[in-house]
Length: 126
Length: 311
Image (cartoon, rainbow over all chains, first blue to last red):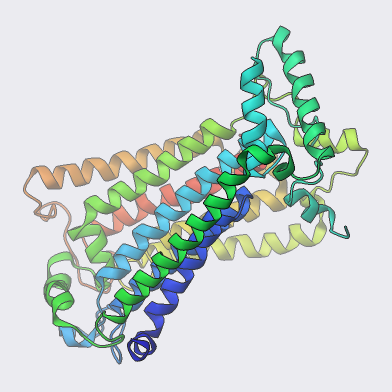
């Protein structure tokens, strides 16, 4: 298994990045750090997709001089998928940053458990 | 504690925005009471150090369990995924299962879509419905951020500039810097031209709507940061952004809807494909690229504006 992992080193590194992001999501209490973790997870996914489409010794899928032999180019499908992923990642990051700004304006803190505690007290008193 | 001001703010120990950025969401009579209560809670939390102590013993068991479950699930997730990676086909080698469909794209792509860039032909012709959804995701994100961050007299007591006035600090307006202004005067046109080049060459080479739009959005953001919001509003007003985004999205929807309705035959009777490699080639791909680029550019600029000043 270790030899296989070393052969697939790029995918393995993508999985490690994904795991780092997931661990940050679970263990960080700070909303900004959770967001950074989510972005690292996104990056791991993009790296995985891009390395799945790569074929050694071939060129980017842009037709030059009318060569339309499939053996000359790498796989173009993962490139399109990564494009979709990047756009969705940007949108999600923007929305989560906006929600963080709103939470900060209301509770003046970024720590999730403090926000939780304060919101509990505030709703009880109303 | 020798942390810098920014770090201590990030860790939630000090609050530089105390009583400055409040939202007035409640009615007048309950507002004062709510504010007093919030201040009391905040003091209590700060006095007792971190919130961990406030939450105290009753949730201690929960946090211990949470940590155990989180560690186990992280290790299991990474282990399972690494095991899957070890059983994948070798990196950098062709495996026929995944390249079967690609052969068709590469062999017929230039002929059918008129675009030299196979990825552009794929995402804007074969799979254009996907890209239409993507542009709408961006637009929806812009609407959500607008709902969350838009400020007017109703929900904002003080603005960011008032914060500096209250603190007695000098407001560092970056648009008054001569270096910034002069550099931007040289750079912004160059970045804009590069963005348009990337946008228009999407069907012939690397580039396309998303990357070109992002470069143009960056140029707009630099312009706005260097010359101030007043001048930027005169060129790229909010109304212009809304109309351009609306026009681009409705053009994309109408064009692609027509193509789907008439049996997905690429509108070939109306827009000629041209010679692959020229700027005016690829049939519908170039107009769709421009529409996507406009949406991306104005969305990026809108994000910047909303986060900077809430408009």
